[in-house]
Image (cartoon, rainbow, N blue to C red; front, side, top):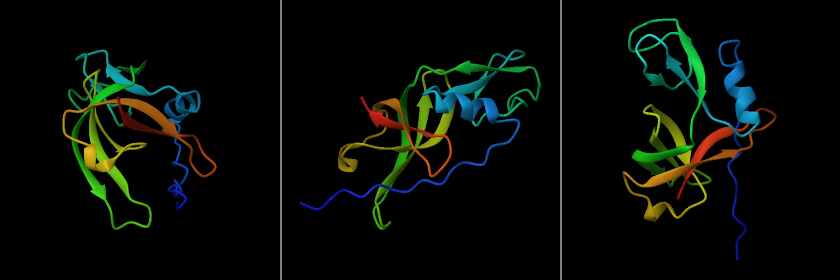
Length: 131
């Protein structure tokens, strides 16, 4: 039986604005930003709210639960992988990978849960696997 290959994930670029996000990822937690002005949560984490443009935002921990909104399986890559938009239980939609599953069984609106995958010398990346 052939040994399964793992994709090598590069370390993410960390800025002062995203440092808390990556620190939390290193502890197995997914953070999103929530606007104190309009109440909307958003991802990718940034200080300015993309809905009302307020800078009055705070970090909140996401539950790690979500559903697949859309996905695409990259089969021609050296190591096949699935890219997806996952709608978090808290509302934001994030671009991520679906891992540790049969890609042929994936479907939109499928429930998924958070997992972290190691990177090459940096904090782990948030990804999801079917529940």
